[in-house]
Image (cartoon, rainbow, N blue to C red; front, top):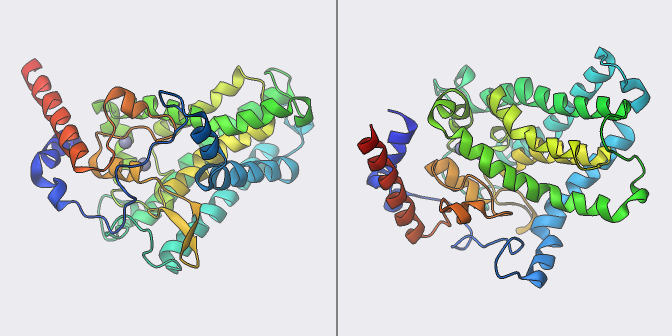
Length: 345
Ligand SMILES: [Zn+2]
Ligand SMILES: [Zn+2]
């Protein structure tokens, strides 16, 4: 049975609303991010940009990590004029180390030592073991393999291309952020929004049947997701997914933007698939991790291709806000697609 057929079946009642269980979900409908909305809500947008969910959980931690990477963990540009194994290997090992530290650390914290228990965990089911679909019959080992061998390699590949191009003066860039302080900050704030827009379209393309079967199904084997699942993808998907960074070939950027962009896409995929909405401290949510919106995509496949930052799903009618009405709307939409496909065949 193909996934498209499976989904049609799921949506026609086999796993309909009555059978859907979550241990936790946020208040429904899922709240809109008030930035790209009509009519504009400038105050609400500003409030969101400085909120716990955005400034404290995305821009500051990933901005700090990118700044540390540039200041202390990056081979000097003068070494990067020619493609040489030394500096390239150094960048790969650094990225692998950072990925293992943050994503592996989150896995240990949430799943191995269960230091947060089940607080704010969406999915009642556990990560899969003894499942033939996964390498070594183990979801976590399978996810580690795809993330490290393919993911970190292609992430490093994109960074290497930018650093090499900067070292050779081939792209618009600057090295002193004080030259363009406003632009520097605006770009940091804007990258996740650009990614959200780009993600919708490339993700929708990845759901095109031939590409889904050969490529995107690697990611979707993760029905219940953990930190290692986020960046567990087929190499073709890594190449497509990470291509949002190519925006910096036309917009003058600082190397910190490149690291921020890539780390947000790679390590951020780990946090956004952690399976827990937030990290808590003394029972209170502190760092926002995973949107429920994407949990619905892993459960249902044919909705929520993007994320809430730029609501492209809403604009194209594929949004699922978690409410019973959305279940019905998505089911109807799916039925009409299946019957259109049948009458066309
Ligand atoms: Zn996913
Ligand atoms: Zn998908």
